[in-house]
Length: 53
Image (cartoon, rainbow, N blue to C red; front, side, top):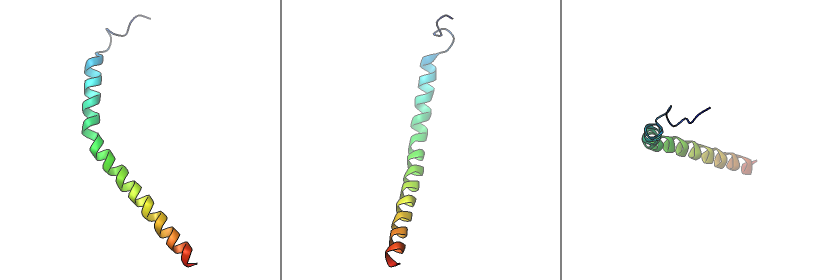
């Protein structure tokens, strides 16, 4: 099977991948932060409900 260096333009691929990652990362972190706050809020509400019973 020969070298794949001539088949793909790896510099372009990694450049495009890095650009897309830089573009999407802030929005992805926002979604993850909202999800984490939701889980934390669910845990607090659950523990308060269980302490009253």
